[in-house]
Length: 303
Image 1 (tube, rainbow, N blue to C red):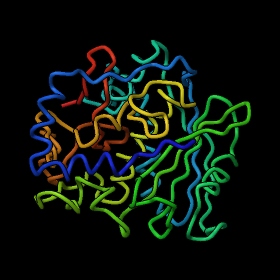
Image 2: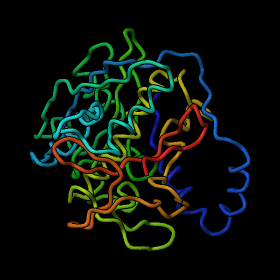
Image 3: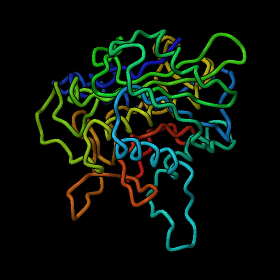
Image 4: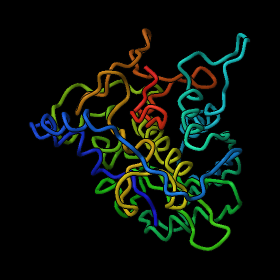
């Protein structure tokens, strides 16, 4: 069973602005958000993240995503090359609170499938087939589809998903699509005007690529879910078939003061005007979503 980064959770951000959210938000404040642990296996570090690039990605696009993945483990060091805070690594470190163990990740193998070996319209079973081309324990195999590729449910019910194989040893996998030409208002928000809700100006994407910067947000979401709920028995709230997980439980929150339709107070690059909340490797900046903190039972942001 694959867990989807549901657009339904995004719709909570936009559709409920009309007044429904105002009444329900009071209830949310009075009732702490709790992701229950279902006593299943979790992924402990080092976790290898293997990548399958399906379709055409430019070298710059690939570097944005690979730099993000490598930034997950960039610790603050007393050197001139140290990554400034807030960092992608400090964001990812919250996952360690779920099992009190290392959540270290390392980028593993990469497969480039630029010729669309299975066509430009993929079914769910084909995503799993591509993901399991690299099968190894303690890994998450991620399929990244280019902007020309349609996937079942993409833009309609999900922007990405994660799941696992049924046979042992079970392998965790994930998928994220580039929504640039298909549905940026749904899967690349807040870097594009939303389909629903108030049409406020979008934020400037930190790496100059709305589709790929949107992919980073969705990749962060499914990776956190894959580590904390890899096999359907980890941390989540609600039904196992449509769970709210570490990040999807906090959809639409990127900075303090966030509310439906407003991403919150984030940092702005004085030179480019780009919005971000986390520093990464090679001088990169990223916007990462809020993550539920099991120590506080609240959605935690970096800024």
